[in-house]
Image 1: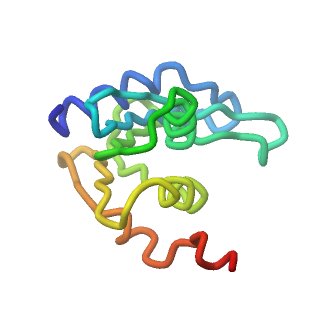
Image 2 (image 1 turned 45 degrees about the vertical axis):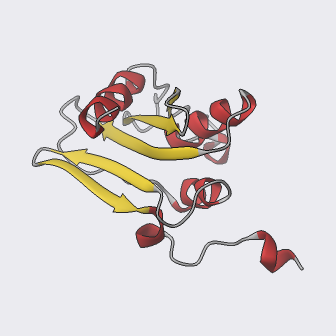
Image 3 (image 1 turned 90 degrees about the vertical axis):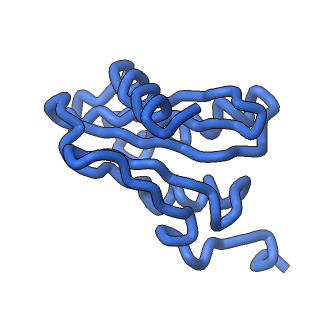
Length: 134
């Protein structure tokens, strides 16, 4: 799957967003090593801390389906439907992804100028790992 196709899947997933408070719809598309695709959207809650981001929604859906090896994730968000600005994963989503993905895992983002690719380690250079639990 191309990065453009992955971004389009993320944009499509954002249409299912439940975002009555922020009015900012986010979609994510997570590509597994076996080429299966899991999408997610942000789901807000009146108790803001109970909100779940699109990236974690996609990740948790994939893990619940027995997948735990991933190639890349695309994230697209917009308050007005234009997807004009970069919407990057939050720290909690980056930490959740780091449980299953190496620092070389690709994060694909979009804005009005096109597609941008970054590594997970560029966002989260020092993830909390099982080694810290010892």
